[in-house]
Amino acid sequence: MFSSKVQIPPSATVTINTIAQQKKLAGQRVFNLSAGEPIMNTAKYMRETVDWAMDNGQTLYPPVAGIEELRTRAAKWMNETYETEYHEKNTIVTCGGKFGIYLLLQAFLNDGDEVVIIAPYWVSYPSMVRLFGGVPVTVETTEENNWKATARDIEKACTDRTKMIILNNASNPTGTMYTRHELNDILETAAGKNILVMSDEVYSGLTYDGRQFISCGSFGEYREHVTVVQSCSKNFGMTGWRVGFVFGREDIIKMLAKIQGQSITGTSTISQWAAIAALQEAKTITAEINREMVSRRDIFINTFNGLFPEKINAPHSTFYSFIPLKAFGTKETDDVKFCEKVLEEGNVAMVPGTAFGKPGFVRASFGEKPEELKSALNALATHLAI
Ligand code: PLP
Image 1: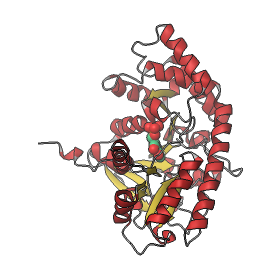
Image 2: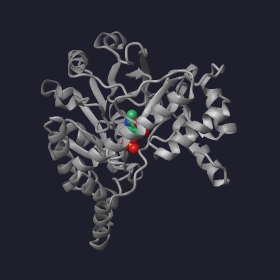
Image 3: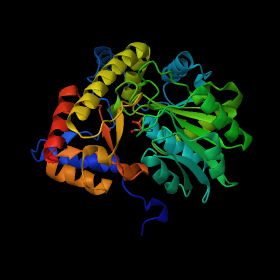
Image 4: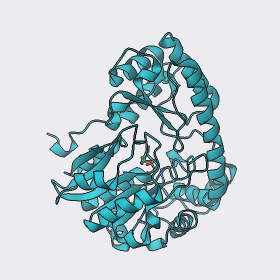
């Protein structure tokens, strides 16, 4: 009955999160290490802007590509923060970065087109590629190589059917970040083959220990071949508002707007005003979220290392720790079974590495508040009888 294109698994992170929420609703105490969000309170200035928007009639349909002021501010934010050269016309506001990725794949893929994806990958990439008839081609990476793919690895995966390369910098689930030199090599390879790079940079603001984030959009010579996906979700702690962006060539942005106009119309007007407020205060929010996430990360890593048999390292970006199963001191070798059992019996939610294309690992998020992180790890240790 249903199209063969929608024969895809549900998002693993959403599934785990849903089970965790259901357990909570049933009155159980659930410890959530699965959430892909920095849990923060909504800032006062954001509430004030939203109040102003509601009082001033900003509750009607938005312009399809986004409120002009937001597009302009978003481009300015990218230019000032990441040395890009985008204008309003190079910018579309999407319903989260996720819908930006969806629009890009829909705009470019014909049946059988290949998309190069680096594993471990964000759970939605392969499924979204399949939704549009594309074929995901994965490039494997290893922990020893910091989960990085080289330009050569990517080149080897390209064929004459390759339409796009998806680069997730900084990476969910590994927290890996690429250097300017590494990115230059990858973009040079892509441009040489006339392949578009979709650079998913939704964690760009969450970088720690003095590490500098380099945007693929900052390489002027490869501008034609780069689109950048961005978001307010992780950078400004606004996951539920659903505001993201795509930056790129004007013809691409126009095409995305055409599809958006025939699908969701646009992102909620009220949310767009909240995003305008966030971008006005971008520097302050980024500094605050970074401070908070570094502190949560350190609490998470120190607590983990104090409780479990194998030590894990602190990631330099995002709010995820990608942990080998053996570090938990378990005999279980199946990460899916491990996560299912730990959630069912121990009430601790984590996402199995299999969902990211890397069995034998588990992704734990430290986006939760510090007390929750400590309680969750203690509950996990108790459950595993360590
Ligand atoms: N890209 C990556 C790598 C992500 O981890 C996520 C969310 O988890 C997204 C994109 C989409 O985020 P949003 O739609 O909330 O902007």
